[in-house]
Amino acid sequence: MLAVGIVTEVFGPHGAELPGFDLTLCTERPGPVPTDLGVPLTIAHGLDRLVSADLVIALPWAGFRTPPPPAVLDALSAAHGRGALVAAHCVGAFALAAAGLLDGRRATTHWRFAELLAHRHPDVRVEPDALYIDEGRILTGAGAAAGFDLCLHLLRREYGAAVANAVARDVVLPSHRDGGQAQYLAAPVPADCGDDRLADVLAWARENLHEPLPVAELARRAVMSKRSFARRFTAATGTTPHAWLRSLRLSSAEELLETTDLPVEEIARRVGYTSAAVLREQFVRRRGVPPRSYRRSFTTTP
Image 1 (cartoon, rainbow, N blue to C red):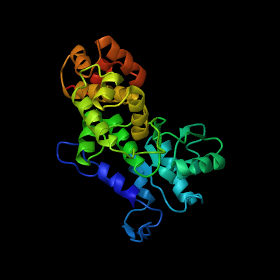
Image 2 (image 1 turned 30 degrees about the vertical axis):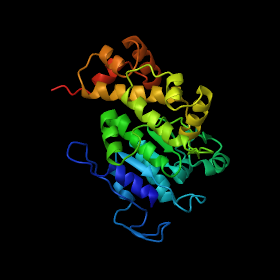
Image 3 (image 1 turned 120 degrees about the horizontal axis):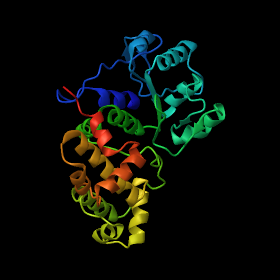
Image 4 (image 1 turned 90 degrees about the vertical axis):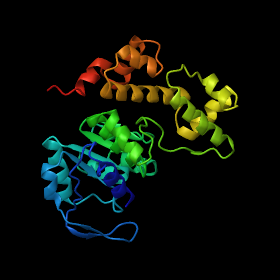
């Protein structure tokens, strides 16, 4: 039920100013479908709806240790074969693997079942620590709430940062977490009173992204040593301060490129880079295209 809620929340209606999607739940045999909460879902549509879908997401199911019926595997393969995006998160990745769609590709799943996925499907390059992995027309995500990260990444990739950020704000989620960020943290939330200080510092950093923001300054504001701050930051977020800031700067740059006519030099200044050249170098390395090319891809020509 969590997986159904995630997908319907992200791709459901969010107001006239955002893209709308024709969202359909499908099953091999339409009718009541049991769920892990004991409340059945009545699914009206069968696998024939996948014939025209632009995006197919295989959701987790309790019987993932047994391959899905051949009709499901054939439908997934056919969707991919005609050019649809095919994605899965959590143990939904087992369905894509059973259909042969992950052979020779990188993939992830819930960290608890990554070893089983690798054992069952040795041709799949399982990366158990990733939040999500984008292999072009095949995408996989980690377990539970990481489904939000996968769905928001899809929105960001296809519609841009502005749309993804707007939906994230609507559902009160972080707008972007890198796919390589750790999915499982041994201590996700540090236990002592420093948590509030850390949250305040992160909020301040977001509001002052145009500043250099060295780790030493963030640590000073958190009233911690630089080493303690870095350790606590990684424990709380699963990434380093440097990587977190880089992701935030690039995400902000994406949104400004999409939604404003500001020169690249001004955008670089606003997101904290010393020059347009530095922004371009980071953008090409992390996004695969220079900022101006990225902007053109979101410009509609009359």
